[in-house]
Length: 468
Image 1 (tube, rainbow, N blue to C red):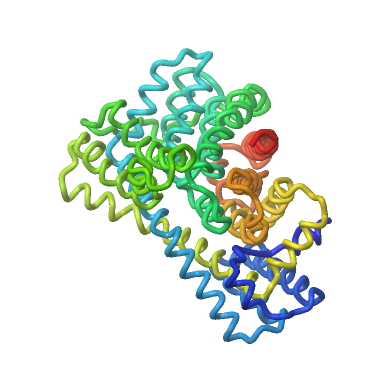
Image 2: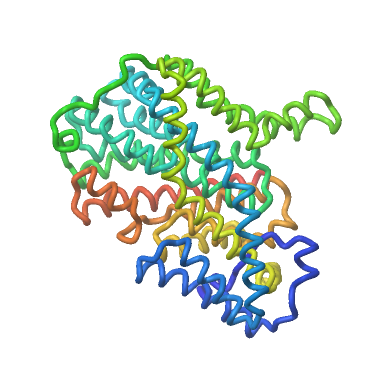
């Protein structure tokens, strides 16, 4: 079963792609796919090579073992690299800009203070889960974690609770949004590779994320807080609380800015379902809800609502936006290289081979998607690499699925991509060091939370698949 699952490898098989697929026997294609994946895993895990280089070399390996001319392999890789960068790169950049504005303006602090300040000790873990989800909606996981850590410390100290009992719900909110909800890189890549409807995927993602966060966050934290009862450390060893902006946007203004792209993209999805083609309202909503337009509007709205609300001048706004881009350079390269790897698999014919195998196997595609993402996540430690590779493997199957089913396929991959974070995941060490935990304590809290999040997400995906 494992070899069959791993032999899956790749993307959108359009009619044009199918016409160009060379006639290579399965006995050569399967080893090519397996060896290509193995090269990626070994280079990332054993030699600590950057995933961008690992994916690039893995693509060349697939072409060489399959017997494709190296020039054709390079053409396939560059085509996939360019189309993925064009389709997803701009969205990731705009999302990073908005997240930076939210942090620099103090809008994120306003959300935290408002929600936590109105919570009792009993509801505090639930409030922290809400904070994590709301902050995680527009922000990358690492940025959200760094932003929330001083707050988690402060809340745990004031409430005299274990940092795990307070922090796990917030981390669950951040992680669920990172794996399941666009505009995060993983879901965006899967949506692009599988040609899923972004609005429907966003709606399903939020619907699945909420109960998943409740289970893996506040409910699990009751047990994790007993297993790992660690008091909050001082603020990064200084004993001082972080300095806040003297002026910042109000909670209502911040919430409006955060939800702007979500509302626009969901409006497009609803218009596509309920409005007829040619309808003026649908035409407008289709334009405004296009991901790049929705996120561009969100950035512009954020500049006026968040930036001006915090008293930021023109130079300060420009500096905030400029500083948002360097940290995501690595993510952009990984995502684009993943697209190149995908295209290499498609052009060799591996994608069609996998599609034919799965079609006659009777295996649940949603379960298969989750398993593939889990295996790659465990091997590489990267949720983004797991999502990129798994979506490429299963992309040919999406052509015969309904629009809601394709969105669920995206979410099954997303759920699998966050499974059991361990020592090969940078997030594992980030949580360990910030929380002041041992390796064993981190596994009993953070790693188990990620596993519960992944399994719960899959369960809710399968349940939703029964009714759509």
